Each structure stands twice: as C-alpha cells, then as structure tokens.
Image (cartoon, rainbow, N blue to C red; front, top):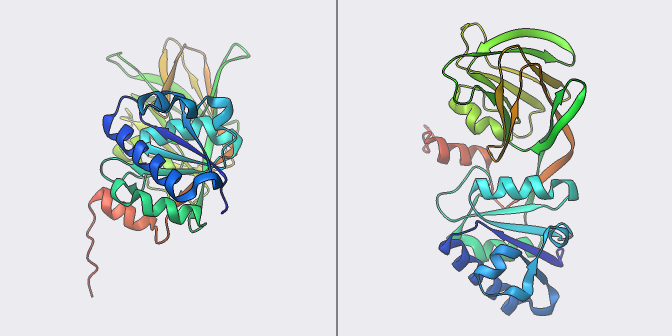
Length: 291
C-alpha cells in the first residue's frame, strides 16, 4: 500500500459530514486495521466522538495523503494549509460534484479503496504567493489556490489602481476591482466576471477587471512566471481577498504583489477523471455529442 498515514479533514458544523467521516473511519478500520494510521482534524474528531484520533496542524502536515470531506471551500482551506508540506489531497463532495471535490459521497468507499491501491491520477495545481507592501515594508502575506481579488468593498464608487506585470506598466484601471486568478480559479469568481477558462495544465495567470469604466480593459492571460503588482492610487483604499477565505484592508499607496509560488497543490483524482466532463457537468454544457 502506497499510503501509510491518512488525515481526515471535514467541513465543520455539518452533521452530514460527521456521518460520512464515521462511515469512512469504520471502513478504514475494518479493511486495513494496523496497516494504516488515521488522523482526524481535531474539531472533526470531537464531532464524531473519536478524541483519541484528534490531530493538530503539526501532525496533519506529516500525513501521506489528506482526504477532505465537504465542498470546494473546505478543500481550498485544506490546500492552503497543507501545500507547503506536499500533502496530496482527495476531495469528497457531500452535495453535487464540485470543481475540485470530484468524488461523490455515494462512491466514497470504493474510491478510497482505489486510492489506497495506488490507482489515483495526480493533478498538480499552481499556487499564488500574495503579499501587501506599504511604504517599503511587507505588511501581509499568504497563499491562494484560486484567486486574489482587490475590490472597492462597501464603497459606492470606482477605485483606481496601477497595474504592472514584471515591473512593466500595463495600465491604470478604474473599476470595481481586479481578479488575479490561477487556472484553478478561472472557473470560480473570475468566470462570473467573464474571464477565460484556463485548463489546469495551461501555464497562465488570468487578469480579470471587475466592471471596468473603460470597456477596452478586457481580461488577459499572461505567463505563469509573471509577477503582478496592483498599486492603489490615492485616495482609494480597497479590500483584498484571498480565495474568499481571508482578507486584508489595503490603504491608498499599498502594493498588492501576486506571483507563482514555489509550492504546488496535488489533487488525486479517481481513474477515468476528465476535466472536460467536469466542465460539462458544472457548466451544463451539452452532454451528448453529435454524430
């Protein structure tokens, strides 16, 4: 068996996820016994009545694989925490199939057996290193798997920012904001803003303006080795969001810097996984090819 230690991570405060975690844990115990060490994220362990299996972050990062139960948001959170430690992720969705959590709850046990038999397909996804700089000092840093979004927040007006790529001036943007998206994030918020869909294998970064004042400011895809800088022009403050899960209040004159991270997120898909089939499912494209 390829994997010897498994971390179970679930969405908090979800009775359905707690039930699924209990079923999965029982399956692992009855079929693999001492061959497998199982850790459960502390909050989830308490919810399912297995406190002896509770593991903190320092323990979870040592797992050979993390099985995430919930939705894409739960997987995003786990990915951001584990990416620096090269822990591959498997996503099990409690509802409809997600863009990343592509195993249905009804298929969970069979899929995990295939995983432990080494039958999954690895899929490497790029991450962003994101920073906010103020007067020459870095005041915030984090990682993002989907996107970095700079927007006007609650203000009822446009904001202005200077957009630079690898230090070269691109334009001054007057808009509700800007989305900087990875290929993974191209099917998230960026898609609703008419951004391009980037296949995960495409080495690109999407810049997608949010409701630009000038209609000529169109979405553009740049190389993934680019560094994007968004400089807030006085007097415009802005909110900066990272995967929709953390945020920072930036001030006029701050620079938001987004570059490809040295780390990647590895997703493990079951045999037969198809990115295009997932798009057909999620975007309701025609599923029947014409002959």
